[in-house]
Image (tube, rainbow, N blue to C red):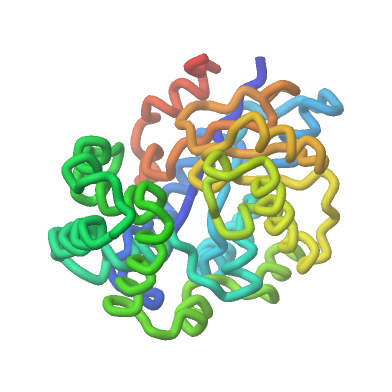
Length: 328
């Protein structure tokens, strides 16, 4: 069985960089150290090396690793790309079509920025629960939402998870959309297009990545969780995502896809297969089994799962990669 490590990155930038201070991010100096650690213990490969290992039985090198960068942030161009280019490390970047092409701020980023803009999470909780109680068509009380969503996650305490989940998807759309937009305008910016211009890379910058040998894939049209949509709406979301490939003059057959929030269902996989997608990534933390039947549901570990010191001993994920063991 062939195994590969796939690492997922989001914000890589100084804490004071970008249009909002305080976003959770990996500092470029820590990223540089992490790359040194990776080069000591792994062999960086491209996503299409994984594809060739299945379709043409091309052998993978020892401890292969693929670096993936989600959402198309400007920091990926400013801070990530120069390091990768200097070190000749391949990577795949997954911009979202509405952010790259339409200059819309993704809901997930609006939520992150709202959280970064205030130290009082309780204020956000109160605003959410006031909106729930003020919904004339609502059938659930705040206590019911708390019972379901007030819990810690892998990275966040319960109040932050509660805010994220309700503003991401748990609230009815009639409540969620105006509430999130109001919070973003109040706490972050009244000019969404200008904010997006600072937050995301441009089409010309994405073209530079491609020209330098990096891979650019598709990551949704609006960054919507596919299983929440009908099959028809999933098709629209995926087809909208492929606008990125068209804008960059990348051929559609054989493209790479990244599921928004890592979520998919049988319709998602079937729709990607119909569109000749080569491989697609989730956010399930595990080593990726590289085989024909798993290429559209590949897991990834988080950047936080690898050390950010070059000379430390191999951690658990690295030891598992060397041993060739996944959790399946």
